[in-house]
Length: 477
Ligand SMILES: *Cc1c(COP(=O)(O)O)cnc(C)c1O
Image (cartoon, rainbow, N blue to C red):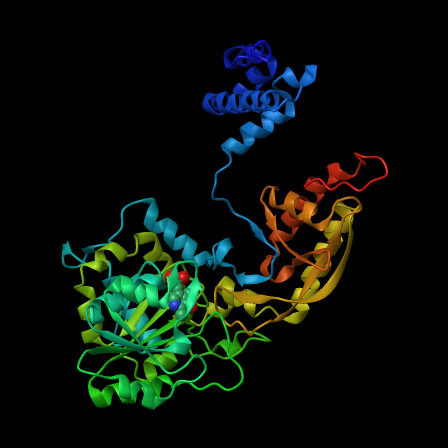
């Protein structure tokens, strides 16, 4: 065994060989060295595991080495084609930005900007000044503040308004948004004390009224963004909660989650109604928090919309410094909000465009993808079927807008194997698997994505054409 191990090629030797020399002409040395090292480690592993590599396995080079170098040079964070039909796919980066927002980010990030500088007065300004007026005029809020995401907005609100005191929340609203954002945990982290009222399915006005004490700092209402309750349920409306709070001098905070500026039911067919941030400000909430990259369709951000006195308290909280947004976020958010101001959002904010895509547009797009697949990858069997998309992003859980998908099967690969290959394409394509078929829902693919999607199918599944094991379907990923 020792003799075999000593016989393994050395990095320096391999570097002098033809394959490596060729690679060095197009790839940085560190990547070629790392790839060779990985290949040698692989050989060592196989030897130690008792495998006897064949003679040619001792040679390091060829496609395997090239692939390894390419993988090392590929960025970790990369664009993907979303064929899942989930519009606000949190794992896929939620809302794609509008062209106007991307242009503004570039304009602001390329050089210097007036992030914290008042050009007209030649003195220091605040990053929080840029968007407050626009947010105010769009939502009706007296004042506004922007932080990194909605989780940060809720944390800041609780820490700034209720640390060391009590916050009353309905048991039906102690939600988990995903991973680590759970209302009881955020409450604890903020230093506020949670007072639960009501039951899982029903909470009444009297439950809040009885729980208010001298220790009560806030009434908190949390939107049940990502789940729905049906049956014997009752909740207290924001307007009623505000009335209860006002009578006892306690402010009401609403964590709205998604925070659309356009009535959601008008966004597209099959989309349920939920309150907008405008509705909740109008209902008298002292503070509303919502996300920038859910239904609003902007960058990741948390918006705090509220009364001047409330926003002022939050503005002076030291936590704000830790939660503040950067210039690129503010640039993208301002440009996105301008689209709403100018009546251009439905046509230019990608989230709204995808949710509002007409049935016929989706059908035509699916037919186009089918046609491309028939030309580029004729070995696949593909057909257009009706499916239902999802909004995603923990928003509108009951909405399943009707859409079209191309259902694809490969003569030799299982759907799972085809899916794995598509995820390794460049750019990767992420699809859905249902009933043994791989489904590409076209709602979340742009017209420009279709060629790339077809190319992903063509290039990644072509090599599986030749049977590797005569007579048997290949199960390799
Ligand atoms: C999504 C959501 C959050 C978290 O917002 P992020 O922008 O993801 O930080 C908090 N509360 C509710 C009700 C939500 O829907």
